[in-house]
Length: 106
Image 1 (cartoon, rainbow, N blue to C red):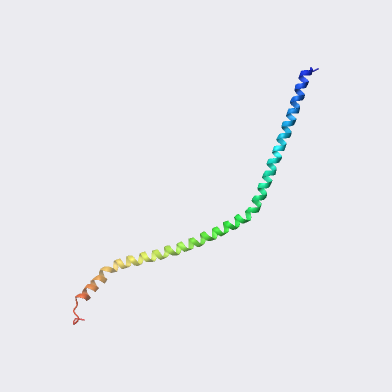
Image 2: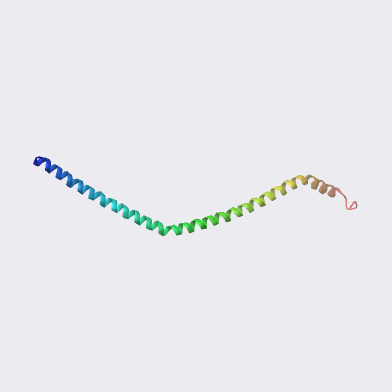
């Protein structure tokens, strides 16, 4: 048979373990409750975030289209400048030749 001291310690340990278990259970329930609240809030915000994402995507698509147009215009300008560069000696030669002519050569 166990003596009185051992029984008292076992009983105190059992009570302490019970209180610790009850405390842990209460804390887990609180965490679960908080997670439920967070989940509820996320559920309310999600449609707004989805709408924002959609409008942002549309904005990027529009900006991309504008940039493609600007790039195309710059490419055209670049090719025209190079074409002018190629034609410039002939244009200058003709201009100088016509300025050397006298009005009676006309």
